[in-house]
Length: 557
Figure 1 (tube, rainbow, N blue to C red):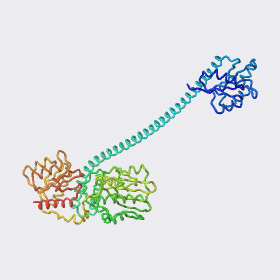
Figure 2: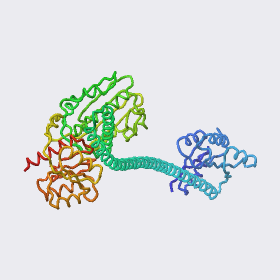
Figure 3: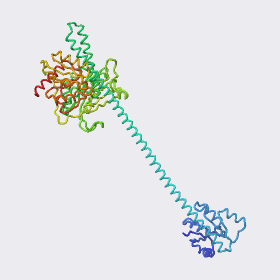
Figure 4: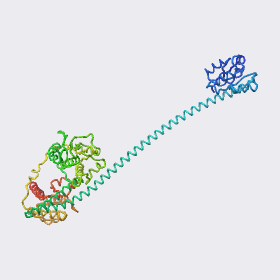
């Protein structure tokens, strides 16, 4: 137990000594003062727990001293005991209490009474201070706990916000993934439907074009009749071009990728592109000469550029500028592209541009903002299909009122030298074969089979028809001899490619031409020498392919 300070105030030394003797057994610190001034000095220097004050003092009586002590904020609640041999009447007591005393001790002093009263007030002081300390500790702990709770609450709030952000981000990512999945499924479904429709349409166009071309050769010299037939042929050819665009979108066209020098390609078709543009439209190119070669079908890339230039021209009413640029750009490669080296080809215009909703649908098949008869809505779809089938992607960015930029990312042809374009005259220099041949025509479509046979017979050949691969094998197994087989690819039961494999293994040296309405063909070494015809084909294309097949067969033999 820590001792407390007790101040004894009396002008007589003997009385102070007597107080000291009586109170020394309490074990407290006893401080003596013989005047009010001396008492005040002790009060300013020390923390006093209990004060004993004599009422009658010469310079300043006890009432005045106590009143002054009570004016100090630190001693407003300190226990003060008056000691007096006189002035113990009731008015005097009331005056003392009014001045601030808490108790009275009369003289002569009873030691036990004085000690008891001082002990009570000293213990009360200690307990009050202990309570104050406990309250202060409690307040500190409350403040600390409150701060901890606030910190925990802030952390919890921050964690909740981060969790909400992560949930929102994951939700957006999931929605984006679902949108991409839906778009992929939609495109795949459209592609399958488009491929099937294009195959059937090409078969019909095959029969139409073949019959019209044969009819044209047999017409008498009637200009009007020839004009009608020629009009029908042009319409059928336009239908064939439309199915080719559908196949490009559906990624089912037959591509012949090769290493292509893009600067050389653009320079070769620059005049053609300029003629396709409207008046008042300038073109600028930003194509470095050191660009590595692309791996792409050259003819299809030329057609894709033509589509992009026409679209840009249509968007710039009154004129403008088209900028075509190319660069190898690996650092900003889109995340959707596999790892590797790519070249980004961009065609940009400063035309009308598109809003966000229109730009999002721009590559959809048959979607167009052009007027009636000015577009099919397949140009950009074809370009997108070419990019995807070539191992790249198409990106489109547009701002309403500012213009549009279409970027085509295509892979670089690693370790392959760029091939020069084959002139069309060279490609057609294969001599037509005029000797009468015996040809087996295999196709499950009667109209196509009949049309193909008619074109061959018109060329002087002899044909035998089979409606299926199984029927063809049965005819071959009967011992009949043929110089050539022309077979459709998409047939029920057995495909044309499967039939060709069986023929190559069982009838060595017998050439096979594979005709197909779309390019769902297997790629393997066994079928590498298989010649192909894309439906609808003309009699001239058929004649050249037959001649090539017989010539290559003779060379191989």
